[in-house]
Structures are given as C-alpha cells and as structure tokens.
Image (tube, rainbow, N blue to C red; front, side):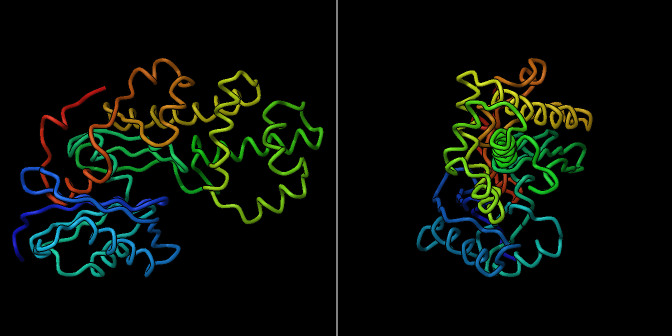
Length: 294
C-alpha cells in the first residue's frame, strides 16, 4: 500500500456533504461541497455524492493512491456499513469511515480525550475518553434528539395545535405558527403525516425569535431544549470528558438559556468535522490553529 502524501476529510451530513484536502504539513489544497449523503435512505446515491464531493476537492494531477481519506457519515452505526463505504471508494492509500459525531468530536478536541454536543436538526452527545468512544442521546427523531431544532419545532407545533383546540391558552407562538396552516388543525395534521425532521426544524428560528421577544410559551419550549442540552453536558462530564464543545445551528441561540454552570464549562470547537476526519485518516493539522480556545 502506498504511503499517503495527502489527507482528505469528508463530513457526510444529513444536510450537506463537505470535503477538504490537505498535505502532510496541514496546508489546504482543495475543497468540495455537495448535497446530503444518507446511506440509509439511498446507498448508491450517497456513494455518488461522496465520490463527486471528493473529486471536487482533489486538484488535477494529484495521485489518488497517495491520498488517505477519512469520512464521517451521519447515522453510521455498524462496522459492516463502514467497510461497505470504504470498498465503494477504491484507489486511495486508505479509507477510514466513522460516524459523523466521532469526526466532529475529533475535530473539536483533537485525538485526545474530550466531548462534543451536537445541537442541529438532530442532537447527540459523544465522549472520547481513554480510547473509548461513547455516543449518548440522539437516537433519531422518533425516540430522541432532545434539544434539537426538529424537537423544538415539534414542541412549538404541538403547543399551537393545543391552543387551536382550546386545550391551553392562546399565545403569540400559537398565533405565529398557526398562520402557516391558516389556523386549521386538520391541515396541520396532514402536513405532519409526511413531514421530515428538517421540516419541523424549519420552525426553530421563528420559535427562538418569539422567545427572544418575550413570549412565555416560546420561552418555556426553548428552556426545555436548553435543559436537554444541559443534561447531555452533565452526562458527558460523568463519562470523564472534561472538555466539552457545543456545535450545531442551535449552539449559539441556546447558550443564553443554559444553566450558568453548564454554559461556563462549554468550550468552542478547535476545528470542524472535516478536519476531524482528516485527523482520523492520519493527517496533521497546524498546531497553532488547533490550540484550545474558548
């Protein structure tokens, strides 16, 4: 097997796919971006997205057999699936495939001990301590993802429906969200029957704005989301992860609602999931750029 001269990281998320190529010194050589790559929805389509995104990041004339590839994939849970992905990308020096949360945690903390909370469309916590990786929370929209944008949107819509049915007082939240459905409960039900987590998550920004403006019901729902994120932080600390980073689209909006002791312990990530994948592939990043910062 040829020795790697270049290292390519891929973050195959549920929303988009990103790739970055670096040389042995950590210098960036190329980037690629593509749509979502969910192997559990469409394996062949996801592999096609990975290939196209990887191709876009590799400059012309770069030998593939000299590139080590690290890939973080959303929802990846089994070694067999990782091996299947690696086998679908032949010609490289090596291909390392892991869950995207693992790549994000390594990007946030480096290869040493640390933890990460992802608060985006979904949510999850991950701890890497003493060589052991533990993922908590998450578990998908139906059974988990507490503190996520999808759950925030669902809670807001549930409150809206309850208000429209006179099961709780009408609020600014219910008025605002109800207008999306002409205040028609049946229309809401039909929409929800086919809605994806991202569809629910699309209501999160409006709910956060209503909370910021002082609507009590919106504040209550956002507070519950922040409580769920705090619970993940406590669980990661209990696993031995002293350094815990918070990332995702809800990371900054939820910070003002977190308990002071939790918010004070959370740190900013050193790098993103793409560079985490590069580290998993054996790459080296500039130490000056990866020094801890809050």
